[in-house]
Image (tube, rainbow over all chains, first blue to last red; front, side, top):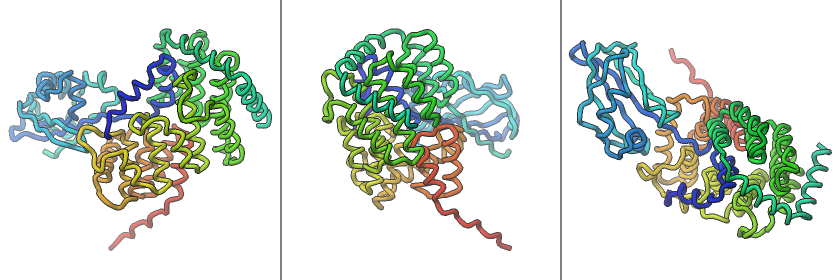
Length: 143
Length: 314
């Protein structure tokens, strides 16, 4: 879009009544935005470990860390993702920046000290508060 | 229905006669709205996520507590309309009588009447409602009166644009939204403008308000992206938005969200026609959202020719 419509809409809706009435009409489902990340898991050459990569949009990373710096997420990845309850991912410091579906993305990758299996259990935590409808789409590779 | 029509005439007449007191009511409501509105905001957040029953429950609580009754009733009516519960919406609007200004009550009831007429395919009543709404929406100029609440002005213009659109008067629909430039409008109005230009087969108008190709990190909502893809297709030139729409829809399909499937339905009706996919997503959408646009999308999906099944080859 050629201008930032959100700030202009905010300017338009300055009176308190507008805050109550206009959102009913403006905040329709049509404006819903979707937050999605992509997790890929595969076997490491060393069978005692697994490889992972996790791609986020840049604005989701900023919402989660409060910083536009992609590296700000590195110390948090071990909190956000766990395999088999207590197996923490160990991220590499290399972050791939790219573009996917029109959005700037950051892909984090690394290993984790647990064996890969196609039905490996993992949990994602702490990111659904700032990103309520976030979904992690997962791809598992064959070992 | 006859009793309802009579009621509407009474309200419309009263609105024209007592316009001054209606405006006084608007000012009162404006002051009232400054109070704590946490519960209303929660209800708004719930309806935004299509959690309609939870939102309605919260709104009943607000009404019972006696605070923000006007706003709660309006939101209630809005949700009932989204669910296609016309009678319930009419009751919510009628409950505003004596509590909100005649302008607000009348606008609410005329919206419901327009929706009822559309769902019953009653063009004559829709025409009448559109005319009454224009009479109510004083002044009839595009500029906003200094006395009128901006919120009510915006609301009435939005409804006039919707009713004009439903009557197939696309140029008038655009005209009702001309009080602000495209980029200032909320997404719901932008979609109305895009759909009007598409219906008038004027895709070039769309690219006067949007870039020819998307800018990374500055994407509009998916609902806009699929319309830009349709406009690009109609114009028969670049493929930026079509490519982007395909990528966005791929993610949306992978997410398998049970809600907000109207973008997918639009995509499979207007961008990459596919009867099976269009009907699947349009039906899924219509199960939770029954606005006129949802109804039109379902009908368009059902009207698509079904692809012949691929024969098995030996």
